[in-house]
Length: 247
Image (tube, rainbow, N blue to C red; front, side, top):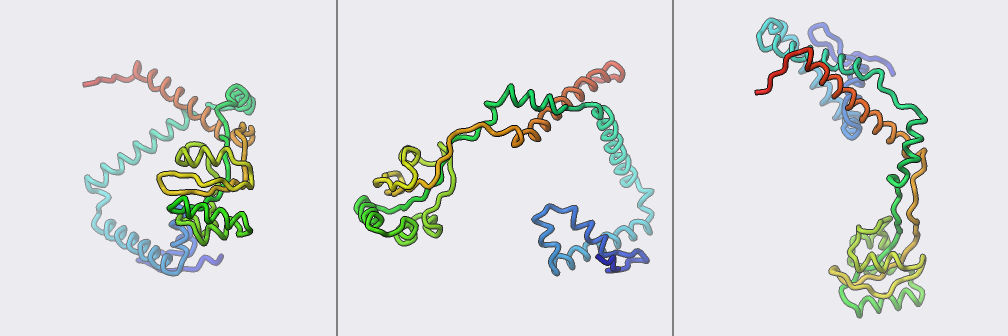
């Protein structure tokens, strides 16, 4: 990437690299817009405005103002405090063995719940449900029947509800769905929404997540817990060195 100069403000060059560095500070979804032509123009204008205000502030000698000096002290205090916290916590570590031992002792905390993948057709009457069921039994595919007859928005995807676990659907629907064999179309099921025909396409039994799936989360959790303890312990010790008054 060529580092082209995009603008010059009072002798200060704003380059392509400056623009890209600024874009990278934004969340990913915002970055996508800022990479467009309109987004780049808008951001460049904001950077130019920032430099213009900065030059105005210098010319007005605002670095000597009470407001600037107070804010500067606040920033310095925050930075110094963070440097101190980093130093206090720098020796807090979690070993690979500690992560593995924690997983072995707490495997039941990392369950993948039982889940199924299913499709359904929703209609407003038992008669209509039985009519559609008969059409499916005589050769109409469940997906095509959903697209033609279902009143649920999922009809556009052939009635596909995706993967779900217990507790995500109304009880009447859930009880039937989790009892169905894969590929079997249910009898009409009445719920508060109407009458459903359900077809289960896949089932996954409850399982324990593998160590590789959770080891990073375990490490972060243990590290945060130990850092919090070390921080609390250290600040409590400082109370005997520096006077603290609660009012």
